[in-house]
Amino acid sequence: MNRYYFLASLLPSALTLGNPPEITFWEFNQLCDQNLSESDLEKTKAIRRYIDLQNFRPMWQQKEIDPHGNYSSKELETHLLLEEGFPEYVFEFLREHETIEERLDFFPKLLSQFYLEEVNQSNHFLKNFLTFERNWRFVMMALRAKTFNRDLSWELQFEDPHDEYVELIMAQKDQNDFIPPEGFEELKGIYEELKFDPLKLHWEICQWRLSQITTLVEGGTFSVDNILCYLAQLIIVENWLKLNHDQGMIIVDNIMKEQQV
Image (cartoon, rainbow, N blue to C red; front, side, top):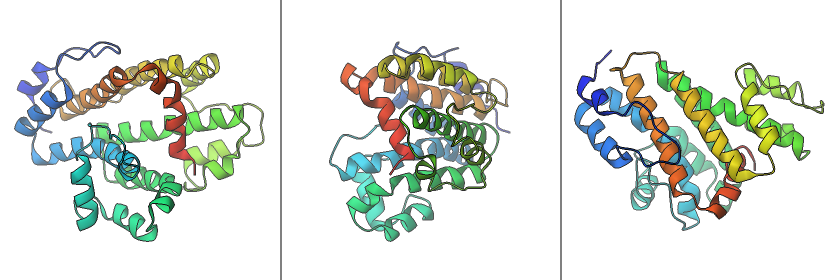
């Protein structure tokens, strides 16, 4: 495993939600380009690929995209036109769903495929992180489904029915309360307390994610795991700083739409 003494020594000991980071995303990205091996740099791109996929929707709707992805709007359009720059499963989705309306309707299917493909191809922190991101969203979806009487079968229609978390959720579909899997009890408490205050809920979920992501690191201070951990946390911190109050009031609903048609 590579050791990145110079890059790791530049990183602050912690990132704090609500405060500008000492090293911005773009500064950090340049440092990664200059210091990481090709294979480790690809791991940073895998984390940012999820944002690229999320950016398809605002791109198709001619809205502003999240700048933390690998590509700008024009680059996204070019790569999709030329069928390059993304794994094959992305282009298979686009070929299957040719119109923008259909792609938007079936978008959760693409995100489900992202996690399936990327988790299977990753290891160490990257695998832990992608698995964690997928699973906490499952838990939030299940909690909100109980609150608003949504059909869990419909919510999970694009997921593998034999997946451990999908089976756990579906086993509780007829119960009044959802009992989360081990490790997500705190998330349920946060949701139950703040479910009708989206801005505070999003703040607390971001705080919880920052804390949890730190526990996913397997390597030491100078490992690529630590570098990837900083990247994942940095995106959360910078995205919070971009929010205004109105955006904050709808952000949780937008997150949940990842799991919905």
